[in-house]
Length: 478
Image (cartoon, rainbow, N blue to C red; front, side, top):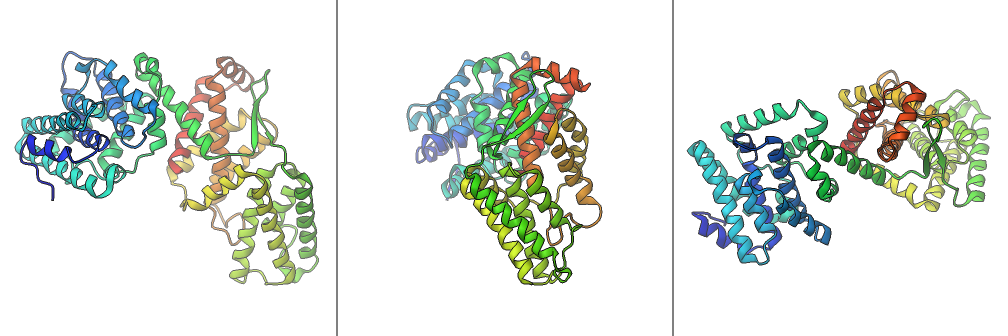
């Protein structure tokens, strides 16, 4: 059992851990003192907020990733004026960059004691809370390592009231500029609550170039949105290429070349024949107006050269038919079962030939995504007109259909397909992946933003903000 009585006992315990664990331990202590930034005098609080947040996030990332670039990023934190840090953060960074366990142990123990002293300056109960939380972090590190301790609330028994007041004051001030400080507010709230970090996102933020950090909070916020877009694009692989018209800026999609065109054509031929067979007898329970049949007709006739869309539609109909037969909404006739089988085979064949599509389906299967919140639905509905306006052709139609499916389609009447509990997985993949791609392309070309604004009548800033908010929403759902 861990027991801390003074700085020497903290340092002794630290000597039994790795440098990474010691740095994270000290960083957690420093993070408890983060709200005290607002008490500093003589320094631009925005500089203090940003430099301290960067230092803590970077040393936490260094506790998980061992790559050279992360080590360099941690050392780069020292380039920021030390006076801009809360004292405990300076000690924690010293631990993260220490060449030996002994030096790291001393620095981390200093961070813990410094935080305790700051708490004591508030009142004795805050000091007790800081000590109890440090002990809890130490025990958690011993049992569960860095990943475990970073998924545990920062304060074991809740934030001391006075410090909670400081954080509320700080959050209120920063919330006046949500586009600049939104990430950092959510980051610190996550620490307080013990939310499991999105390590890839944190890693991307830690690796933002030094010059951008030195340019200030606004520049860093824009870079963070780029990191988010890259993550969404990588996590939602689509077998298509996003292109922008050089004259109008309007976006469209070009499906990737089908890996095995004869096999796909044969599969779609089988689906077409199975549809005709199942419709030949009314006793099979399906008719031309059935949602399942409409989706299959559209996939075969409209998306025959788009393997990504075909796989999504075939997977959806396959699940629908299985559900309806299981509930006896449809008979287990040979024609119905044959239709389900060929639809499933078509989807599986595409996944076998296209690794990115297979990865996409695996992601959707892993995530038990529930119904979208009312707030999320409202965000998607608000973004819909802009997403459609900046698109053309099939992409514009898809944007309109997908937004409708995620908003009105799921809130009014029966599900689109019988037997399927819709959670909007495929629609979210399409909207999120495409919005992220658009944002990345527009961030690289102000001229493209200008042309898009001129051709749509939508202000460029509105276009960018809409895409940023969509990417942020989708990332929160992954």
